[in-house]
Image (cartoon, rainbow, N blue to C red; front, side, top):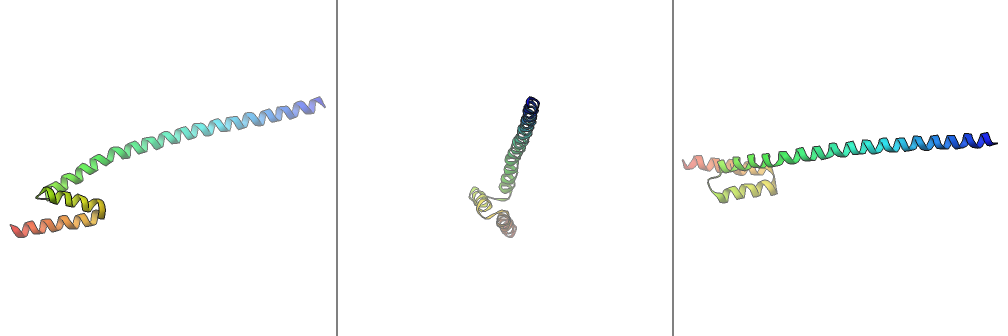
Length: 99
């Protein structure tokens, strides 16, 4: 009888130890994934300012006035890239016609 109780206790202890080890492995994997996510977010945030500066510089090169720059940026934000390109193309066409 004592042997059976000891055996059950050892089995439960072994199961508990195994479960605790699995929990620790999951926690480690979760910490690793969180770090990867933070690294990814940081890398994406670093790309955004460079992209915005490039776009703004390109718009500034095409637009003859500050009002047109603001309009181009407004179109970009609210209507999207395709509409902004159309607007900028129309400015270039008008500039060529005026020359």
